[in-house]
Length: 359
Image (cartoon, rainbow, N blue to C red):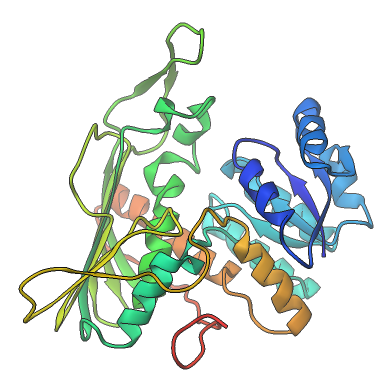
C-alpha cells in the first residue's frame, strides 16, 4: 500500500519511524502547507517525493492518505482524499464537527474506501491486557469507571501550541480521544452524556527557546467534566483539564462487582496494570501481555492496510472515531445547554478472537 502523508509537523516523525519498519506499506510522498517542512521530512526519511497537497492527492502513485494536519483541517483533507479515490487514516479527532465526520464515513462508503483514525494505543500491551482481564471476568460485571487527564497544557512543551486552544483543540478534543477510546473499547458504546466545561484562563503564555513570553487567546474550554452513561449499564466520569499544575489521580479505573482494575496511561502503549479483587488484601500487578510496548503509533494504519488485503474490518475504525467525536462534542453541548445529551452513533468490535486477543 503506497502512502502519502499530508502534514509534516510534530507528530509525523514517530509515524514515519514506525511505517518505515512496517511490512506491506511504502511511504511514497509527503506534503505540507510549508513546503520546506515537507522537503526536510522527505530528506530525513528517504521519501521519494515532497510536493504540495493538491499534487499528492492527485497522484496515481498514492493509495492511502495519512492525514496528520491540525484538527481543523482534518475533515477537509480527508474528504478531498476520498474524492480523489484514496483510503484515509487520520490523526485524532476524526473531525471537529460530528456532521463532517458523518460526511467522511458516508463518502467512504459510497466510494468503497476505508477510513481509519487514531488513537491506536488500544493495540498496546497495557490496554490489551486490561481488555483481556475484563473479558475474563476478573472484576465481574463493570458497574462504573473514572478517567482523569490532568495537566497544565501543551504550551509547556509544544513549540507552537496555539492550535490546541482553537476549535478542535482543548483538553477534551486533544487528549479525550485516548481516554474515551479506551473506555468504550472496555465498556462498549455510550448512550448519553452530561457535561460541564469552562475556560479558566482566557489567555495563555508560551516561551520558546530564545523568545520573549508570548500570549495568545483561548477559544475552547480548558477544563471539562463529564458523566457517561454506557449502553451496557455502567456509569463513567471523566475530567480532562489543561488548568491543573499537578495531580495524584489515576488515569483510568474500572469498578466491577468483584473488584477494581487500574488502567495505565491510555496515551501510551505500555504501563502497569493493577488488579484488586474483593477479597484481596493488596493490589496485584498484572504482567503485560502481547506486542506493542514501545511507541507504536501507526499500528492502526498498518492493521487497516492488512484488513483491506484480507477483506476484513479494521480495528481503529472511522465508526469508532465518530462515536468518540460524538461524545466529546455532546459533552461541550451539554455544558452550554444545561441538559443531558443523547449519543446516536455506535460501533461494533470487529477485531477479537474468542479469547479476546488480537489476531
